[in-house]
Length: 244
Image (cartoon, rainbow, N blue to C red; front, side, top):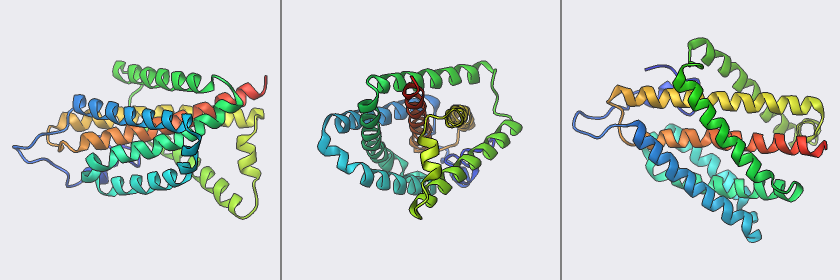
């Protein structure tokens, strides 16, 4: 098994997770199907939230529920078949509220962000399958460092705002050239993280002894990355459009 730098799909998750000889095992096709189901749930709930103003009030509770579910799934991957659809619904509510916010400021931005997110995903899949981008140890280490740096930035921004300092939040929300450059970097790192997701799922399925429920776990992992990518893409587009 190749190591993964993605904290959602880590070596710890697969340690001790093996199917019995007679049990069904994880496949790429099965993971793709579960991912499609999860994304359909997410999109339907997002559309419902964006089209019904009364649903916006559920966005913050949904974000909290989604965060808790993500932690539970990470530590209990066997629960992924039951919890991943619920997580998709929670994230759909959050993305619906976020999309409505940005669409109100910039008409048409949601479709642009969706299109760019899909194009990015299929482009990274093409680069991965064609061998142009390989999940080498150096590639993984570089992404680990970059993702940790982004996480620290997010945490410092959030914590400092709790104590009355909103400078970092205001900076990242601004349309300054430096803020735009940072958004471009984060979008790029989120896109490259898809390579790790593809690699982990492919190598896990190739083992032939990973249990079937890990297909839902793989779907959950891809959804986490795609949600992150979409949020950063729509944020970047908003900054660019506000400079016009």
